[in-house]
Image 1: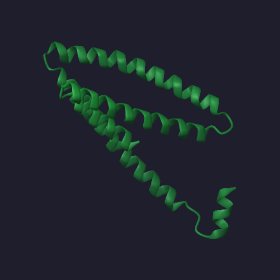
Image 2: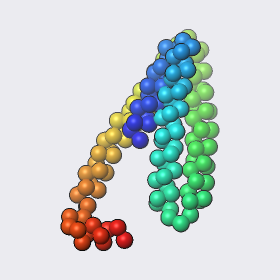
Image 3: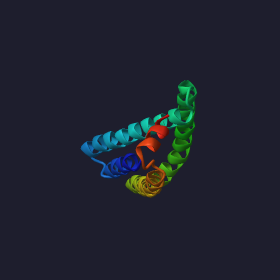
Image 4: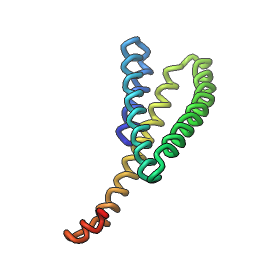
Length: 133
């Protein structure tokens, strides 16, 4: 997840440059980050809702739709504010800062989760076999 948000941060920072190549590169980076994030969330939810992947994917699509709607409404108002102030590039830098903060938060929370998982890992061969059942 941290990598996904980092790609999104790079993409939105590139959008602030404003040139056509920067817009294309920024869009590509942001899209890759979004694809990886959605795939990770899909797989995580399918794992947590065993036996009902259709429900998991449906919930994922619903949350993506609601999130997209809210992001479009709030982001649209904020972009209009920055554009009226004559500095739309600052909007993209603010979005990049948010994504970088999310990447840092995901990295910190993920590191704690990995440490807890490693501490709970089976130690002997018989525990490893039992854990796979």
